[in-house]
View 1 (cartoon, rainbow, N blue to C red):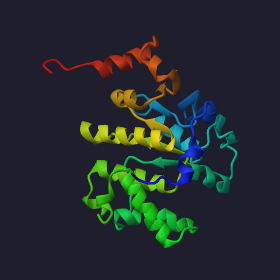
View 2 (view 1 turned 135 degrees about the horizontal axis):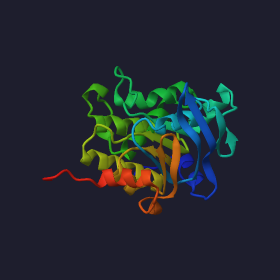
View 3 (view 1 turned 135 degrees about the vertical axis):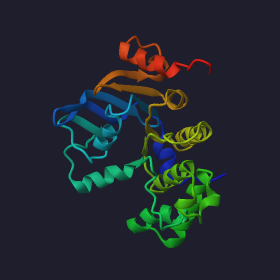
Length: 265
């Protein structure tokens, strides 16, 4: 069994204090309101799934959290630290504590899988090369991708690229990971494997997670809590067990469409 670096285990024990919190956050691009007074929070070590159709502000919320976008109003906190007023130096620490796995994996095509994972570790400059190589091996084993170490990204499937991107994110020893549509363009079997991996990382490492998705089945397997966005508004925020009982008509429409089966299927 892979030995987990100490920073990723006991230090990330689950608590009920908010690790990430949005308070009344709004942002608009010109006349288009993307988020309209949205509030939610995530305790340490839990998983929030942000659900909704395309274009409702799910990914925008992640970029606000990391300081890539500033909201027009409202407050964003990570461990009680206000993100919206931070300078770039302070934001770098937030981005170390809270890292993001993009849809495309954002891997360097000219580097092997192992070199991709090692790259940010070398850039940080505080580890010896043998420590970097040990950490690369540990992270690849953790995501069941040890055999891909010498492969180039061009030879990988979409699902494999996502697993490698998760391994690279883990190598920096974050406290939280943001997943932007992790099951887009993968088949149901790969989606299940990615879901199993995200769940395993939560249980083994105590990681706090936000998963942006439109996939209700994926959310059912992972979520401790659910945020449902529609037309920029939070139409539901609460325990995952209560989401499918919500009477809001926009939520009901989303759930009914998700449950719809084409005739003859």
